Length: 193
Image (cartoon, rainbow, N blue to C red):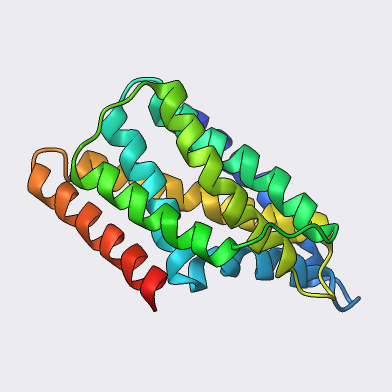
């Protein structure tokens, strides 16, 4: 059993190693995309909170929503990022990102239960704003596919953290609702600030 886990563990990190192999390259600029992409969602509190909130709300919804909600966010975020990299920027991106925090926070705080399809559609709308910001803010010297891979991996990781937080706080519903209030409050602050 242990050898199966070790084998799986090695193969599960192989794509990440291949994708980031530009770091060891003697040619400058190859690693900029992956590292910039990885850090973009992690260094911006607005992106970080929204992506954790997606996972947290997906946990609250339960069932198929646990994977459908985050998957729809990643898919639409990727489409919008490609458009942003091509020069098409959505209007009012910062307002859309702030609204995503406010709405997702309120959905979590009030434990709003919807179907998986409605939940996936809701987060997909917000993903357009986050993806547009990622695409437009791509560093000039970054390789687009590596940058995209970086922020997709970071986003999936943040969704996973949200799912784990939901699971860990499931017995303390007040903690989940409190997290939702804090996320909604940060969105409201960004909207007026």
